[in-house]
Image 1 (cartoon, rainbow, N blue to C red):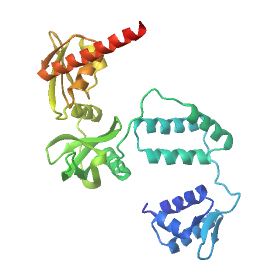
Image 2 (image 1 turned 45 degrees about the vertical axis):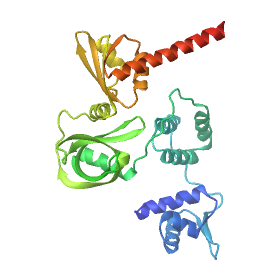
Image 3 (image 1 turned 120 degrees about the horizontal axis):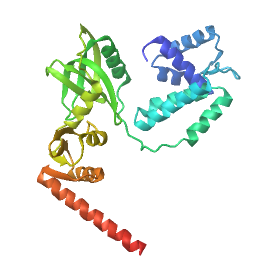
Image 4 (image 1 turned 90 degrees about the vertical axis):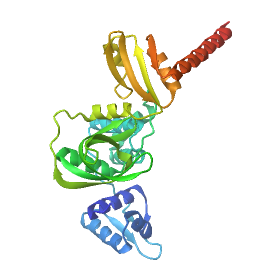
Length: 321
């Protein structure tokens, strides 16, 4: 919150949300001294917002009783769209605090009748999808990367890998992708000399550079991210021949799971996984005949899953009888 206008608006928001805020508390929240807080209060008064300053050792600031900011001019459709977007974003794993505060601000300035209807929507809306725990990236990094991708400008990244190794990267960002609760950026990494994918929450800083670049005609950030995730070097390399048609396999197995190759005997699924029991469950859930090519340990994981399922089926039968 480095810009004075941003701090001025933040002070107004704090006064709107609280009956009274002490001078030291305001100064701490805004990252300024108390003299600057007094200047901000005077500026708000000049703008026609009645801020009352209470002098003395325990002095503070408040809005004049009965004063309210003008209601946010949203139609019913617009307010519903905003609330649905924030609620869905929170469910998908978008950064929680920002979504919560934005939702509270929207509700606070809506006209009373519309606010009640929107509150009813929030309290009664259900989701069939489970809540994802997202890894919140720094807002400054997200905005810088978006600006760089839009204007085709190189960025200097300070990045920390999953192993904790810090590095500096010069990147030509092709685009941002949100996938399974995480933000990714993909682009040409000048250090590696190839297109790479980076998790945005592991970026410590992103600095715009003067250099520009041309976007490759075949650049596809979504495809690049899903393909990169499928190639993560997990513990086990897996190859399974699926006895199904290629179009059925593509409809059920996304690129982030693995690569699919059509053969004369079916579709070859190639991927890497950390846990073989999860792979066994995936194969069972597909419902197609399959042949495990590697690793041998996956066969044992499938057998163990089959035993558990048979035991569960026998248990259910006994209960029904």
